[in-house]
Image (cartoon, rainbow, N blue to C red; front, side, top):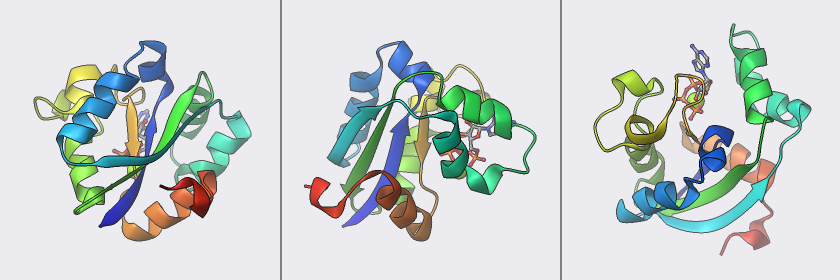
Length: 137
Ligand code: ATP
Ligand code: MG
């Protein structure tokens, strides 16, 4: 089984959508093996999104990700990384397939409700950034 790292972003926690989003993950066969609600500082968001630091939306993204609580989680399942990205839908909700998290809930390309790791290497780094091995059960 594969593991991936997921974040339910501030636009979604603000609208009380954590349970509805988790239901989509579970319905797709993903198991939530670790989860906690935290408030990131802007510096922490900046470090987490370091790969995007030269993109024009970087500052806006770090402001947004620290604007309210997020739920960080580890999802486990068969092909969890690809499956999670399928459930999330395209980055821009206007392009997201019907029934995906972003089609149903995202407000814009920036405030798009969820983050999911894009490869095994990034999943491992992102999981370790927020969770100790003993927290994954
Ligand atoms: P994520 O990495 O959050 O799972 P993603 O892989 O679909 O999403 P990336 O291209 O990695 O998208 O961008 C990371 C995040 O930066 C996006 O999820 C979104 O919140 C924000 N973002 C991306 N493009 C834009 C944009 N053009 N304007 C504002 N914010 C953006
Ligand atoms: Mg990405």
